[in-house]
Amino acid sequence: MARIQYKPGKKDAELLLTILLYMVPTMILIGVFQLLPIVKAFEYSFFKINLMSGAKTFVGFRNYISAWNDARFINSLVTTVRYFLMRVPLQVLSGFFLALLIFRPKRWTGPMRTIFLLPVITSMVVITAILGLMMHPTNGLFNAVLDILHIPPLEYLTNPDQALESIVFITVWKNSGLTMLFFLAGMVAISPTLYEAATIDGASSFQKHWYVTLPMLKKTFAFVVITTTIRSFQVFGPILLTTAGGPADATRVVVMHIYDNAFVYNQMGYASALSVVLAVILIAVSLLQIRGSRMKKGGM
Amino acid sequence: MRIDTTDIGRKTALYMLLAILTILFLMPYMWMLGSAFKPRSELFTYVFPVSWKTFIPLEPTLRNFSRLLNELGFMRNIFNSLLLAASTVTGSILVCGMTAFVLAMIEFPGRRLLYLLIMFTMMVPFEARMIPTFLVVQGLGLSNTFTALYLPWLADAFLIFLFTNHFSEIPSDLYHAAVIDGCPHRKVFWRIMLPNIVPALISGGLIKFFIAWDAYVWPLIILRSDKWQVIGVAIANLFTDQSIEWELIFAGSLLSTVPIIILFFFLQKYYIAGMMSGGVKE
Image (tube, rainbow over all chains, first blue to last red; front, side):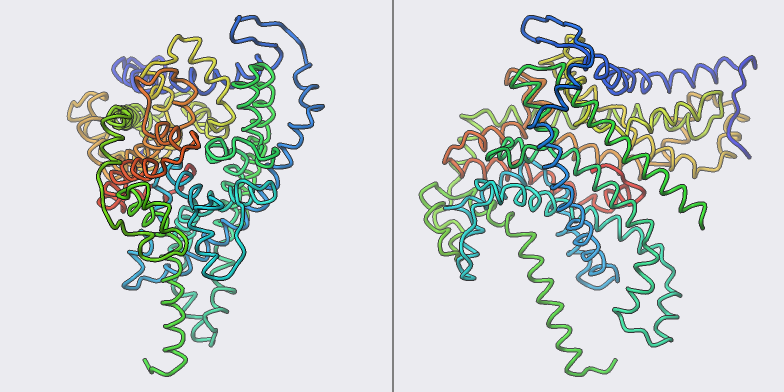
């Protein structure tokens, strides 16, 4: 039997009331806190706004032109892309590798899975603070460990050439367990008969993964790459907490630049224009994902 | 199975790998755990060279915790975070559950449109909406209130997606039968449908709990006084002060992490199930 039907004009006031009663809270909350801000960002991006005085002046496209000419903003886009280019392959590969390791149930897979998931559930502030202290050049644990291995010490977050890489390390360390979960979900769906057939054909375990696991996980790879890409473009918390964009703008990503313009330089209109640019990028990536998953469905 | 030398070699390599990964993933936790109970003098003395003294306090002390809770107001921060998590979890389960029920089980004009509209919000994450959301909440006169902390986070497209999927698996015969028995539509939700998706409710609630406990950027920008400040911002303040009171950072981090780990330990299968069924958010 199909869903319960509500047809307008049909005299079923109770059903109509139920629909309204149960839909309206969500629609109001989504409208006020998610859709309205998107519309407002668009509107504010054409104004110069001073929060202190409350003055609001129409400036047309000037905020967007300023963005185009803002070397620090262009640089923040480049930094974000660099971050994305490092994080996505690292996180996808480490997540895939962890999933391969615990995919077949053994005595130790349960505890190992829990260990890999600990950083995922631990709060971002705690992870960033502890790893940040571990990266301290003189008192940090990482350099102490490198010392044992006779590797010269690093400067991590305090060196412009190592800071962005350090942020990549923190976020990949925190999130690879989550990527692992997505791959596990994909692997569980692979039929065991494929592996049995490969065994009969005399495939080694490497060959099994190369010819069975990888091709069967195409969709999962696409999903993981796109979601990690989106998350790379919104990276912010760990940077605000550790370097706040420094040293020498080495970790100034797009959201960091938006935040500074809004809350440090008091340029709310300009920050709104930059938010619109970021939103457009993120929506474009999402649409790519939707198109990709549609194509896959059509092909199967 | 035949046991030969290559098999033993492979086993050894595997266990070595597992040991290295365990150390890589657990070392920050061990350092945090040990250092939280150390006096400051001990903290910096035993890092170089690394030894067991780096991780085990020689003279364990609870002073770091008592300073945080009694002098630095962490009690209030923890209470606020618990209140925030409880409000977010109950509120979002209620609001999203009701909506998911209607979207999954009742056909009405505009149903698909509303569903797409809700799913669209997933495309523009908080970081891209941060500034205008701040301005809208401020315009509503809510800045610096507890309401501003949780209200924007109740309607959540991911939870609606999760619950809608689970409601869709319930045969609609059950609904039709209830209507024939004279159960009003609004009560079908509470009496029959909600009890059927309890595991999904736990998954969604747990995910929301972790997100609420993790709150940092939003409370930082929307609150100006300490009254409702949460534990994430309190730890961040210790960290960004560039102070040398590392022992307080460790103790605060431990206080924030223990409840999360306990909760995860008991409910991890729900968390994993929720995330694996098409989890899009962190």
